[in-house]
Length: 307
Image 1 (cartoon, rainbow, N blue to C red):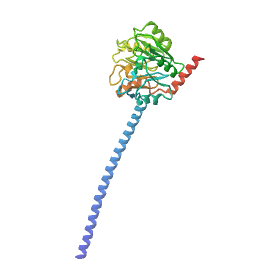
Image 2: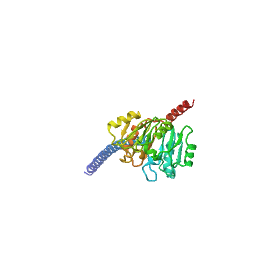
Image 3: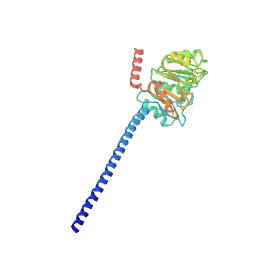
């Protein structure tokens, strides 16, 4: 009996151990399945993060730069950007200047200046790769500073015009200019001569301040959001570039004050939304732009002009 009891005890122990071993194996298997499931989820999340990261990188590096001038989002008021030079207002924060420098320093000169003793240079001047027009309030010292700092091929001209906020009254690229309907005839001739453009007296959505309500490059343009389809077609035909009605700085209609642009980059106020940035990126074809090739093309045209 004792041997039988011992045998039964060993048998029971073996069954007991086998049972627990099976339970442990089951638990382990379940844990492995659970871990595999979690690993799969983690992989999916990492993949998603990588895709989002790629989109984020594309969003950061291929779209317009957002910035402020002393907590003011109207960056087009304090800067002027063309394919040949960039003007920024004196006295701004170093971050404001650095934003332009990081994008442009290796391509075109960046000049700190004032006009008429003020910092609202973007609203007071008009220009393109061929020239720069400044108001009669510009001092001799400021005029000389600009002529010394800008490329020799850029003509700097001071204009005796009663509508002295030239940046509000003129919108142009390297080929065509839209002008305030009340500008003097002599001013219109100077615009055509100095900037090398064809001039059209126009309004945008009924506004005579064409420079305030649009932003142009040789690749496209944004105009006042209330511009009709018929007016868009007419302006696009005159300018020979695609146009879109839009806004900057979270719905601002004053586009010329809220941004500045050339053929390969754009700068706009920090309040500009992702949707507005997407429109800017698309209409100005910033993803396709290569500054080096554009500059090479400009250099060739300048050489051809002098030859």
